[in-house]
Image 1 (cartoon, helix red, strand yellow):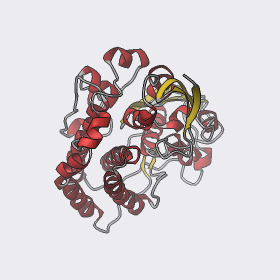
Image 2: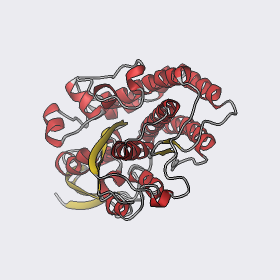
Image 3: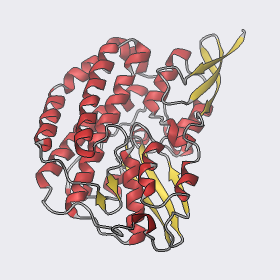
Amino acid sequence: MRKLKLFLGPQHPGMHGNAAIHMYVEGDIIKKSYLLPGMLHRGFEKGMERHSFVNNISLIPRVCVVEPDINELAFAMAVEKLADLKVPERAEWIRMIIMELARISIHLMAYGGLGGPTGNYTLMYHAHADRNTILGFFERITGHRVYHQYIVPGGVRKDLPNDGIEADILDFLTDLENRYDEYRDLGIENPTLLARIKDTILLPEEVVWELGVTGIGMRSAVNKPYDIRKKMPYCKYDEVEFNVPVSNYSDARSRVDLKLKEVVQSIRIIRQCIDKMPEGKVRVPIAQGQSMRWTVPKGHVYSVVESSRGEFGYYMVSNGGTHPYRVGVRGASYPQGLLGIEKYMPGTRIDDAALWVDTMGVCSPEIDR
């Protein structure tokens, strides 16, 4: 049988960002595949070493375009550990609201992303419309829709706006929760989509351990509720109640199912944050008037948060100067997004390649960084 070389991306709507997957196929079966990350986001870690701690606030969100806030928080936590900064309590609760809104946003984007490759455009339109509402909240809070540059060392850039934003968020979450069953019917309970994602694109337990997959990929395969928010709580996650959904069968449907269940838990967390959040300051001033010359004590730290795709961390070294001496980013989707595509995408049908990327939670800038 004749072999062909095909490309998934970067122009293909099933591929995220500027990345592309080179696929060598026989018939409709992928025999060999590898990722070309795109070279759009290359060198961010070295770039951070050439910018001040404060200037890096505008650079770091681009390490994962669709979920930038995890970079802001992981970076800020690393700097705060090095500089021994105590974040105001109100800022910790606001950070959690931002992080959980971001988690809902990326899960909706991934869920809607199933609609394109399967022709289920109603699902895509509904999910992206709700995500757009969340981006509207981000714009009201931060002034930006995508790259927020809001979580900074010492707290958050400014307080929540005094325009009823909290009530509006709660109203939206209630409406979203009321449509939860409708979302399931449109997606993973839809017979057409179910035929494409049930018992396909498997991620066995041995592969999870081999690649170092975390997050939903791991929790869906090994039935263990390992979540950084529970195991190594940061912000105020140890003061809120939420469950970590798990499964013992990691096909594409199970992973998508866990994403929907995580949306429910994020709604639960945000409600508690708004209810428990005190008044007060939201930021510790650092080197007022001379922020570009602010120095951070010598040391090295690893700060880690739970992204929508798993463990996301920053290893940072300071030599006592105004710039990080070294920065290393642990991208949550690196194992399945690079090694997984090369080793475990072969054997998949061509028309399921986009579903493979979407349900595995691949964010290409994390790999290209």
